[in-house]
Amino acid sequence: MAILALSFAVVGVFAQEEGAILGEYGAITVKMLNGKKTALISGTSTETVEIAEDVEVDSIYYDRDYSGEWGKPGTLMLPFDFPNGCLSEFGQIYEMTGIEFNGTSETWQIDTKTMGSNGNFEANRPYFVRPNKNQVVFPAWCAGKTTMKKTVGADTKFSFDNWEFRGMYSYKTWDEGDSDIGRVYGFAAKEKEVDGKTIKQGQFVRVKAGAYIRPFRGYLIYNNSAVLTKSATNSATASIDVEDLPSTIEVVFHDEDETTAIYMLNPHTGEFSTATGWFDMKGRKLDKKPTIKGTYFHNGNKVIIK
Image (cartoon, rainbow, N blue to C red; front, side, top):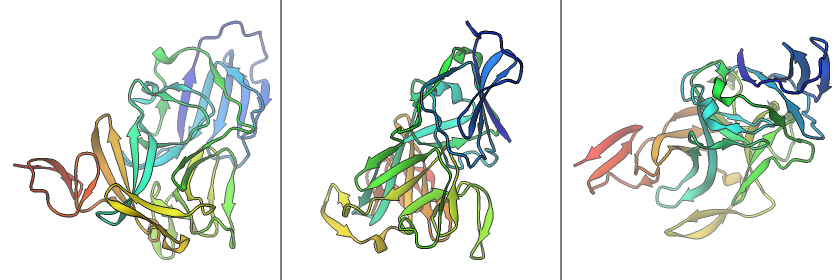
């Protein structure tokens, strides 16, 4: 199991009995451990996180399994702020910047960008994560007290056109007949067999009845209270029905000013593979092989056209 650990100097903390419980907030328990007011966050709990008022702590441990290959996408939301550079050895954190329909290639595309070493991971906001280690340890330069932010009533969703990227502090299941089914996309929490196919951890799949999500994660949903539009700079705006939601979504991960990866997500089969075809360095799909000199992506590889 992975341990996300953030430790701080103890200043002005009154003596407490070792192991004493100082507060319980659902999936988070605050205890006195090693002389520090420590928040223990369970990444497998189904309990709702309920922090009614901000809580200052000296140390944080986040217990969650991040096993898998480098670059396997997942989601992450936590109730505290910290410099993104604290996670530089763990992997990359990306924020979703938009989702749109590419009229040229007739595909849907999610854009993300890396937080960067100078970015700040914000409390109560869902992010994409591409880990390269199971254990997450914050370096010494991140020392200093931190505050568990209020989660009760917190707005943990971000809207992009008619889509929402929702962070969760509660355990949710989608049962048969749920109106969300068919509109929700999420990452598989672990490898399992579904309809005779192997769904691997980290694959982006369309939610079916029986699916669930645990606290501290996020999912994407189409908001059917508005008309879903196909928006492209060089095509007219049109609308489609919920039944026509995409079977594949391309996700572009931008590191600094450069596109570093483009994935093709198939929610029906659970397949998560490198996107095929030609893309420019901003992640925009092209309808054919480019004739202008420059660097491009072709079937997941960088290619220089001379």
